[in-house]
Length: 415
Length: 71
Image (tube, rainbow over all chains, first blue to last red; front, top):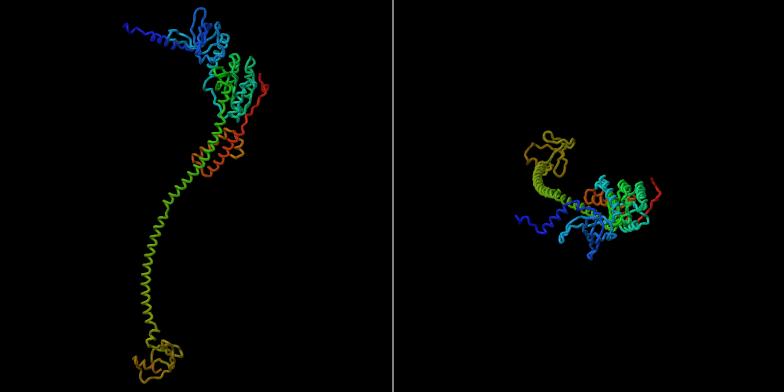
């Protein structure tokens, strides 16, 4: 049991650090006090103690954060330090790990800042849903800044280098001092009176917190929130945050950075256009190729489905048929030839000329042309038709009529 | 869109149109006749984009501080 209640020093220290680090009040805290024992060590870290009448607090600011401080505090300064509380194990000492140090006078400004910030935040002015997108290729950028400021020159240089297609309309204004906020509001209004603005860039170069104070003005913040056109802010340096940054549609760390964020790089655009031109040609060629392929495929399919083969087949059948038909015909014609020949012979045999040639004579009346077929009717003048010609004959009655052939032969011989 | 109309297009519109035309062509949907017209338009748009970039010169104008003042 004794064993269970015993903690190592490290365990205890870790427990204490856990308690401190879980307390959100100690993790995001502003502490007011007087600086003492301030020292910057070789590593670049800052060590100091914050005191008031009764207590002292060890503080450390790491080199990375310290590098961003414009001016270093000195012993005796009244300051507001912001940071989180934790434990330095080797010494069992709790300390403030500071990330910001402000003189107390400015601390009042910061109190105002925080107050305004939380008020506008509560109103919803910082809502991400309110943030508008910027056009990818702005045509006209309205710039709200001082015409003489280095910030404006920086913006011009960036735009000239990156995206000279854009037109810049400067709405000039003071950017610091008591007159700056109303002037900034009017400069925004002048741009909002136009119809051709794509985006507004509100910017100012780096300076002290007092220098940048115009951009923590509530009227300026509301003018930005009420802008018809999206607004990008680029105020001060990377570490400076203003109310304008929160209310703008986007915050850029510097004016130059804002100009870069707003614009595409012309070198990339050139490459993009060249790429698109190539892609266009490629698309056109692909299109042509795909159509050619389609046609080729269709042609192949067509020839596969073509009736040419069928036609060839039928033509062959026709040829076969024709051959068969011709043979049939030949046979038939030959048959008919034979038949006709036979009939013709019969016909010839039966013809009067053939009969005459065999020695018969056809007898007609020379006067009337009538055929004489009976001896009894025979006239005196006769025409005898031989197979090779006709002769005239006069009839002299024979003593006796004979009907036999010999008699006829004799008769012919006589005539 | 006629060649004359293309010349008046701002960069973004021309660039976007070119992208759309390419996508259409790549889809293979247009008829041959349409695709020829699309290609020709794309070619003009591409040349126009190129010309805009080559001829670009940053223009800076300054509004009069007294202009449109409201107090």
